[in-house]
Structures are given as structure tokens and as C-alpha cells.
Amino acid sequence: MTTNSTTSIRVSLFDFDGTLTTLDTLPAFIAHAVGRWRMLVGFGLYLPLIVLMKLHLYANGRVKERLFAHFFKGMTLETFDAHCQSFAKNNAHILRPQGIKAIETACQRGESVLIVSASITNWVLPFFRQLPQVQVIGTQIAVENGRLTGRLASPNCHGAEKVRRVESLFTPRQQYYITAYGDSQGDKEMLAYADEPHYKPFRTK
Image (cartoon, rainbow, N blue to C red; front, side):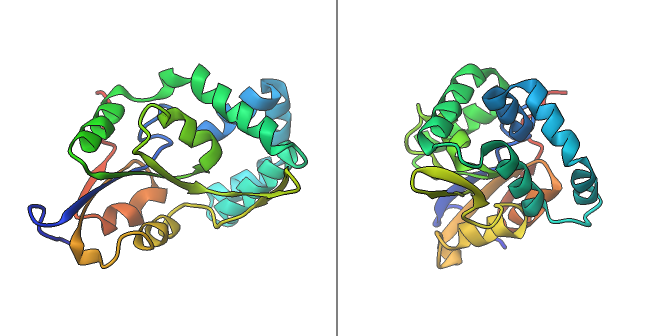
């Protein structure tokens, strides 16, 4: 879809893992929170499901939920969020400088800036604590009585779900000029939805 960039409200959408970061933050966060050895053992237990996911024979969100429950079910939200804060603090180096510069520039222009990620919102948001105008749309986790249930509270924010989440915020669509940045199969719907798509834009050659 194409709208007029000079008369529309501008919105910039950024994928997180791979686009703004140099690595997949799911295993990196798990290793940070529970230790590398426990992370490797846990991933080994679920390797058959991970292979099926890669072959598109098992849903991405279901694998994520199984892994998440294995490592974090029963943990207090307070402890989990402390891990999220320290993960971001200790791993600022994984952010791509060109990507952060693009976010800062969009913020300076007064655009609505959103990180649209399949990763859990809790560990993505602390990476942008110095940019409070940035909004994070990510996968939500279920909490009961202050403890993580191990379940996801929202659909995995991946593929078409990214577009559904964005559409709920920006209607009617024709009022907005949307720029999107992504790097993977999970971003193809969001890139197709944008007026100005950028694929793997921040990678140095």
C-alpha cells in the first residue's frame, strides 16, 4: 500500500532481533538468566521441536511457549524483570549503531516509533529506556499471583501477527505513511504492509 508521505502521519516500525541486534536474543537472554549450561541442556531437550519449527511443521509460538515454560515457569515477575533490566544493561553492544541512529532520527522528526518484535516485551523494552517515546509491541507473558505461568498472554508477535498488532493502533490506514525495517521471514508481512520497506538495512558489508 502506498500513501502520500508529505501529507500523512509518519510511523516507523522496527523489528528487533537481527534487524536492530546482531543476534537472536531468546537464547542469549535465557543464558543470561539461568546460565549457559542450563540453556544448552534445555534447548537440547526441545531440539526435535526446534527442528520441526525450522521445517515449518510446528508453530513458532508453541515452541517458544514450551521453552519459556521450561526455564521460567514459577519465577516471580519481579525476578524476571530484574533479569530483563540487567540483560539490556550488560548487552548494549549487541545493538546495531545504524539502527539506533535511525530510531533517534525518526524520534527527532516527531514520528511514532515502534519496535515490533516476536521477543518478549519485558526484555526488549529496557534496551530503549533512554528513548521513552519508543513503544514496544512484543509477545506478552502470562502472570498469576505475581509469578510467571509459563504461558504466553498474547499470540506470538511474528509474521501476520505483527501486522494485526500495528493495524489495531493505526486506523484508518490511509492517514499514515509507514516505514518498516526487517530482516527475516517473520517480517515479510510487515514489510509488505509498509509504504516504505527496508530489508536488512543496518548490516555493514
